[in-house]
Length: 286
Image 1: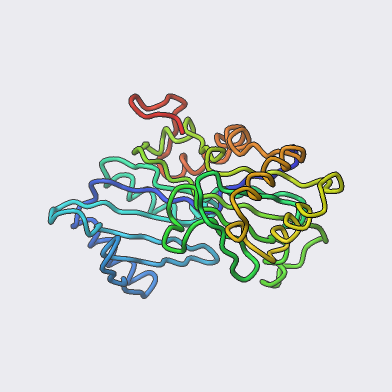
Image 2: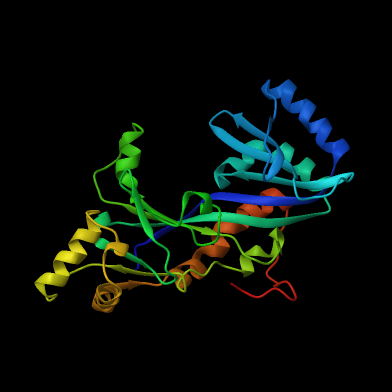
């Protein structure tokens, strides 16, 4: 499918070796600039900040609980790529006061100009699909930051619910989390596009008329959220996936590889001031 639009909806990076002294200084500045205090949590990171500047946001977290007491800890930021410019002074300061910057994760959005009922998605790894308020999820809520966690929803309906009025049309968004197992420097991340084909089979349904009535009814029930795949037998799930071969296949890996460099070049420049086309030795692609 050639008219799929790709975007990065969220990006998270880690700064390694940030001293406690520097963190304390920026923490004081946050209190002065934003008039806020950090929240303390007892899992993940200790200190959590939610910074808001105009319409832009940035989450900042410091000191993972698993790291032993030291003078330096890991610091993580998370935001929408379009919001990075609003926090450029902070990014420059973090870059100059850290030992290295690593890519942590991102949410890659695939926008299909068709209704949700036309986007067929099946897990290749046995993840159950859950439906909540019209959105479809592959993976549990506590797995939302794990690699290949998936959410599918009606993008146009979501924007209308937020009061954003646009031209009429259909748009189904498939959001997939990319969280590589290896530590990849952010400057090199454009050489490592995400790969999701091993996790999901995705097709665009164009014509179900040739499909037998029984299977067609099952497919329509799945696509309209009337039932979930785990309610079907393994035989029916397998046969439905075979039938989807006759529809329009979606190659997540090829789409990501085609657009990854253009999507990540600007974030790399804003966060690190540079990027590299050379892969990191010892790190496998995908």
